[in-house]
Length: 236
Image 1 (cartoon, rainbow, N blue to C red):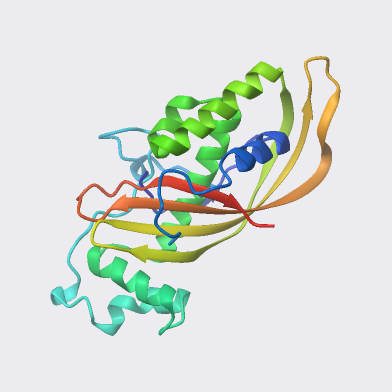
Image 2 (spheres, one colour):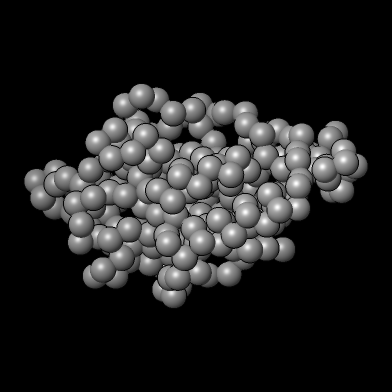
């Protein structure tokens, strides 16, 4: 999945039941055993039309000024986000060294978009979109949850209020992969009904806070800036 510079909040529908089912199915690291290291409106040129309209893009890698990646100004945005000397700061600097175009604030904006796209696609049962944004193992978990929901005959009336907060919680950069874990605090209003119209979960007038840790990964050896969701877990 690719991230880009995304700025405008979208209001979308999502169910508490669906969201909690997603969290229960994908609450463990799946298919990616490295330690942990996704709503804004899409702009036409923010999407990578060469591959898929459902993928959000980071700037392509490029060279830093005079090729000096260790210049203090190169890390200024990172130092504002993570205190110099901390493990997080060090790993984000490694990411900058690997990809001089990497900017943590833009990554976060893109991760919000990815978060919205994924939970919305899950709510809509849009497997095609999910397949482009998730690792194979995580996709299988989403697909199985969608199948079970359809089998249970559930319907929802809901709205996604927005992401209150998104911050990079941890990072890990190796010779092969870059892994960034984002802590999302989102809000939803939702009610879930069975096939007879009876309320089974949620409240159509109550805002619920949801906290998730999602890990995104990409191959640092490739020029392809795609990031994919490789793990999710909930925070108590």
